[in-house]
Length: 206
Image (cartoon, rainbow, N blue to C red; front, side):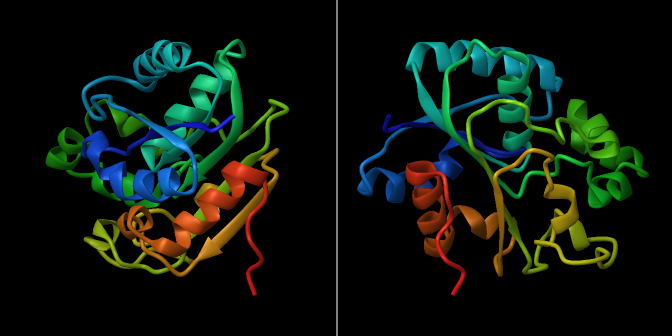
């Protein structure tokens, strides 16, 4: 299996996944960019859309960044009939999001988050019960919009705290010195993604 479905995050188009896709394709993967309206519809609607998209692709690995990671988790946990290979989450706030809750204190912030706002408040899908390997990659370079109203407690990628990325049942997690948005253009992140999607393990941290 060499197909990979890539799922972008909130506020951005699927094209933001292109740099990562290019590196994956160079490594022999066939990439499919999934597009969805991040702030305009609830998670369940995105999951239904991804289900239809995945059924059109066939058996594939999955990689989701930020909100896209929640979309991937929700889809695969709810729709067990969707075939999956290795699954990778990149900076996905599966246990809620401190920065998002802080943003939602403001009316304009709630508008900005749209239908995704409850996810940052409550979290979603912080468990993995399927047999396929799940890997989690988190960032620890605190540069991002999440610091707009002040620093984030603990290690973070500037938007998502490392502790917010933990999924019960995950096979492995790695933390790299990279910021939330830079994950998608980082050669180091791409190397780890290639390793986990291909072999269900991250590269040595040495």
